[in-house]
Each structure stands twice: as structure tokens, then as C-alpha cells.
Amino acid sequence: MWLRSRLQLVPVFAAVATVALGLFTVPDSGGPTSAGSARSSGTSRPDTRGVVLAVHGGAGSALIREETSPEKEKAYRDGLAGALRAGQKVLRGGGSSVDAVEAAVRALEDNELFNAGKGAVFNEDAGHELDASIMRGSDQAAGAVAAVRNVRNPISAARLVMEKSRHVLMVGEGADDFAERHGLKPVTQDYYWTQRRWDALMKAKNPGRPQTKASRAEDEQAMGTVGAVAVDRRRDLAAATSTGGLTNKLAGRVGDSPIIGAGTYAKNDTVAASATGQGEVFIRGAATATISNLIEFDDMDVTSAAREVLIERLPRLGGDGGVIALGPDGEFAAPHSSQGLLHGYLTADGTIVTKIFLDESPPGARGR
Ligand code: GLY
Image (cartoon, rainbow, N blue to C red; front, side, top):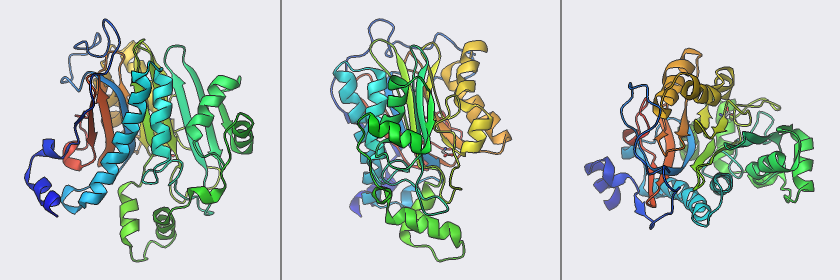
């Protein structure tokens, strides 16, 4: 209670979990620490810079500071920070941005707070089908799986598709079998089960039913999906996204998360982007590829391009959500039209920042 009442009194900065984790080697000359973006439409305010890794934990209703217990706040911040630390360890050791985004997303998939891997939402038939994709910016290689039912970490299956097959997208049983053949130990459907997702399914099927505390919590992340973007010391970008989809979705429904150019995109010259929100609209709007195209062909900076797509274009198609977008020079933006977007980032000096409350990143914000 003490912490909670203090948090209500102090400004946003006090609630932002900023953890100095020591010096982190960044790309050499011209790397993410260099100021400014080479591309600028001149229309956007400066955004967060010097970012080397960012994650999101879904878009949806915002977490309200006054209604959030210190325990719940800590759980969300720890979840995001833990994913950032997993990626940071990889980058510090000289690993690639692909390694970093996979490590970060695996951490989120293993955390049942988030709608991916353990903690994925239920389909209308009370089963789970999971989607994920990963993309490497240096050569635009990509891999994705959709509607898998027996993979603990779908992002690793997506990476296997990218690296061990001649395909980009594999679905259903074939994708499950492929992942197992390449060394991923299968899990049963029970693995994904959580009480809060079950309560959310029951609520979706019986909207008049009184809400439990757990199902109210589920509402807060109604569109939850996880993702990561990174730039490594070679200035190579990567992006990854993973999700259980939407509560009560039809069996067989696939959202934007495994669709390259919708939920995930990475191209070294432009941007690494991972989206969360109403997948159908992100597919129709080719969300992340459009951000890249606006940078490449309309000379926009990362922030302006991400805002244009998330705040202007997708709402016109009837969909809300958010995106994390990272340029090769470390420019970072996290605009969202949904009320909230759980996200966090790691800067080149080793600082971790997490943003979970509405007042830390209001709708339409640039992600600061
Ligand atoms: N954006 C996640 C989904 O629609 O499945």
C-alpha cells in the first residue's frame, strides 16, 4: 500500500522502472547512439533514441495506475524487463539481433501474463492455436508458423522455418511436426492452460456473467500479443512477434502476427517493427511493411511513419492497436491507437525502461 500510495503522488518518472544495467557495447561508428535520423520529414518531434532492443506485451485497455496493485505492477514490469535482459545478454555477448529478439520473445512466451506461449488465449472450441514470425533485416529472410498446437515456443519454430526450410510460413500439423523434427520438444494443449484465460473464454461466451478479478485483468490485455525489435553491433535489424490470437476466435483463424509485412517486418535500411492489435486490420493495412515503405519511398523518419500507419491509417480501416518500431540508428517509436500498449526498451548505455500505465504512454503517443 505504501508503494501504491507513493506511486499515485509522484510523477511518471518514479513509476517507470529504469534500471541501469551497466555499459553495453553498441554498434561502432554511426550506431544506435548517433543522434538523429538520416531521414526526416521534418514533421515529427524527436523521439526516444539510442535504443538497441525493445519489446511489447500487447495492446488493449490501459492499466490504470490507481487501480493497479503494486504486485501486479511489479509482475508486468518484471516480465517486460526480464525479456529485455534476456535479449541484452545475447547482444552483450556479441549475438545477432535475430538471436536477441528470439531470446526476448521466448521469455515473454514463457510468462503466463502475456498472450503467447504459456498463457495463450483459448479458441472458441477451448483449444489453443498459436502464431509467430521472425524476420532478419540484413537479407529480409523470414520464417513463420501459424495455428500450431504443440510448440512451447512458437518463435523458435518460426526461426527454424526461416533457417531450416525453403519456406516462409508453415501452418497447423505440418508446422508442429516440422518443429519437433528439428528438435523442439512438443507440449500438450494442457501446457497453455491458465485460469485467467479460461475465465476470459467463459466471459466471451457468456457476456452477462459476473466478472471475476481474473477476467477483469484479462480485459486489460484483450489484444495481448508479444514482440521484440533489435539492432546489433553490425547494425543489423530484426523483428519477432508471437501470439495466441484473440479470445474465442474461430479454430483455424490466423491473425497478423505470423504474416510478414502485417505483424512483423525488418529491413536494414528502414525499420524493424512488431505489431499488436486487431489482426485482421493489420493484415488488410499491411501495417509493418507500410511503415517500412513510408520510410523508404516517402522519406519519412521512423516515428512519423509508425504514427502515420497506427494513428491515421489503421483506425480508418476500423482497427486499433500498437507497434514498436526501431530504426538502424536507434530511433524508437511505440505509437498506439488502442488505449494502452505495454512495452519497454533497452538503450545502448544499458538502461531499461518499462511503460505499462496509460499516463506513461497515452494513446497517440510516440512511445516516450
Ligand atoms: N494481433 C494478434 C492477432 O490478431 O492475432
